[in-house]
Image 1 (cartoon, one colour):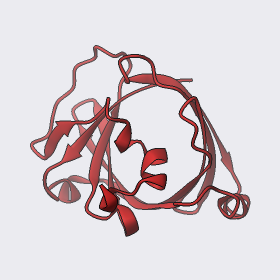
Image 2: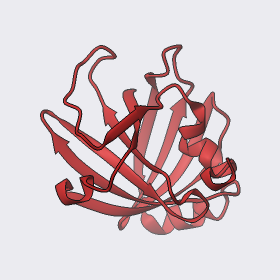
Image 3: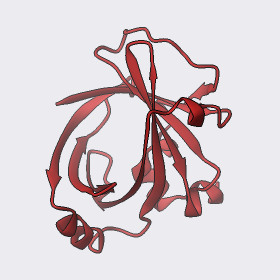
Image 4: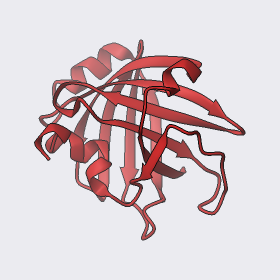
Length: 155
């Protein structure tokens, strides 16, 4: 239940030709309080409810609990969410022993493309693709919960 991930900006669309899957995602927040975000997500034809705790001091680790829920229930819960539903496509790219999840955002966050990689430890090394840009793991502006309230186009 511990999520360890690093986030990076993406410098080109080259990842799209390397992706083995892609899914449209809509997600909203029932709570965007950093100490306990509660997210509702529709990914493809599946619904999910996710609770995340605050990040640790390094910004790399935090508690995460996720449960698949019926997509019709997720649609109802999205209507209860705070303003600012996130709309994006997630591409998955295998690189070495890891999978990068690359999110291309739309709407008020259009222009933002961000990659995440989940790790087994904070010190684990990984292969970096040439389209990977600056690391933004410790920058709270790149949390989806922040983007839902403070869209990228308004920065």
